[in-house]
Image 1 (tube, rainbow, N blue to C red):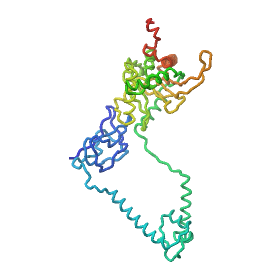
Image 2 (cartoon, rainbow, N blue to C red):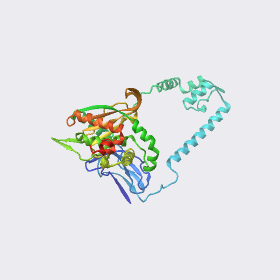
Image 3 (cartoon, rainbow, N blue to C red):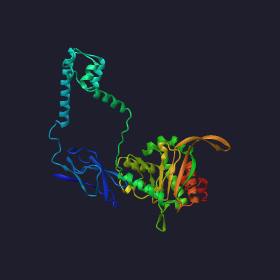
Image 4 (cartoon, helix red, strand yellow):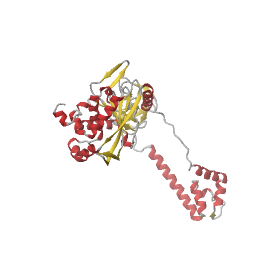
Length: 411
């Protein structure tokens, strides 16, 4: 029985994809649910798995852009084992070994009767030449001149020149941009051209968060099966801030402003294929452990090309963390059609003025890039300041941004 392998539909809005890479070779025996190919859409890289076991026949080569539903290969389910246990590669390897053994035997025989000078032997090895090829009409002593005369002085000198040139490698390799990378480039340029993007900065004292993580990290992991991350604290802080500044959780739609009554936070994830931004839905209703578990799940899927288009679609606000790569300060680019993005950075011990004294504190610069067409400076600065306050006093995030006393007094 012949089973067709077709390009699946990654999402409703996608009509074509690029077949980026076959993960197996033509005429390989594949198993059920084995990953056999990768496809790129303009939103994500996805993996195609085999629905049956059998002999694979590849019909479309890597790099082709194809409509959804295109047959890219077949699986012959009647063939589930190779016809022979001796592969072609094994036969070739055995032949090479046999030839090498014969050549070695001949060379050893010649060397038993011939004396070869060290410099002559070096040239023979460099040019993969055996002694028996030059001993005709030669004496019992093979010199450097004998070897050079035998192989040709010109070719020997060319060999030396090529060896010297190899020390100055100027090679290059050109590879085609993936669909994801091309779409990402288009979107980044569009943001620059179509929005009035500005960035405002602040700095955060990370002492309180670091102390909580140090104190509870083992119990947290034991209880919830996930590490307590900085990202979950910032995500919760963003939710509190967006409640106070709804324009930062909105988008322009023609002549209208859409105010989202929920918070779908995109978390930027770096993958081998490029930057992806999976979405955590309704973060305002989640606890820190639930946020951490969701981040780990989506990040793992994104890096393994298992994430779906639905998990990448939407989002009302984005958080990106360049600090994991050592970035001290940057201006993140808005993820359209959203109006704002928060950038986290590296934590560095710096001297700060605290109660009239100089103290060393673990500090992080944070940046908010925003679309000035919809968000004014007052809201952008206020949002960033609120995030700072929530991180420096994380207990306040459970009291809707107020102090415990203010919550108690209903102020």
